[in-house]
Picture (spheres, one colour):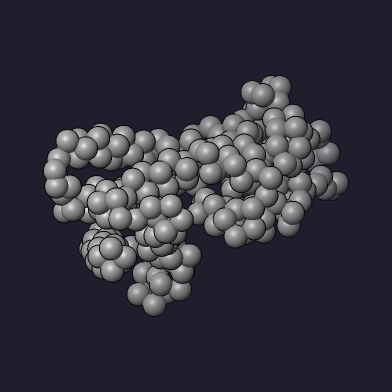
Amino acid sequence: MKKYSGVGPSSKTDSSNQAAEPKKFGPRVNKGAFGKASQSNGFRTVSIKEAFLKAGAELFGDFGLDGTSTRALARKANANISGIVYHFGSKEGLYQAVLEHIVARFDELTASTRKQAKDRLAALAETTPVSRPEILSITGDLILTVFRALDEKLKIKNAEKVILREQTNPTRFYSILYHGFMDDIITICMELVARYSNGKLVGDKLKICTYAIIGQFTSFLMTKEAFMRNLGVKRFSSGQMEIIRLVIMGNIEACLNSWI
């Protein structure tokens, strides 16, 4: 029987017709144009575009943009390699779409908390002296929301790996992540640190202290696998998440007090 790269036999092929023409996108792909083609995963219909986005996040997270081939992407998506060009223009176009997908999901999960943080900060402008416990509460809520989004709620496999790769070895697409959500979080955190210090931290020192604060929770994500193996778990429990929150907030408060 003739084998097709990345493509299986038609779902309607029987034993008497093994050489039948295979469908374009694998064994469980519906008929239709590229834009309407879909494949069943046993629970719902997944579009070819969705399949490539999922495959892209997984492979780009593991191997990076340069280390991932279009053939590997097509094989992972169980789709024809031409689908990459049709839906995204190129491998780089797919990578850009994956980043935009991550940003959209992250925004969906954190937009409410970020808005609340800004509203609470605006209310603090009317408070004299500034309430440091309130600032710590705002910081804690924001950081825990971001941590949970990156750790478990994005539901995009390897999303955190894609983000960390861009942080450590940025591509020309880095601005998608930076302007998509990082800049907003950094701005909020910087305002929180400035308010907590009552204006004593300014300029470069303010910026550096803010990044040190952000590093308090990103360090958990960067060492997540080793951390979970040491704990003997596959995901953090609610109790462990609360301990992480308390430890992070304790570190942040200690840092802030030592800087001012």
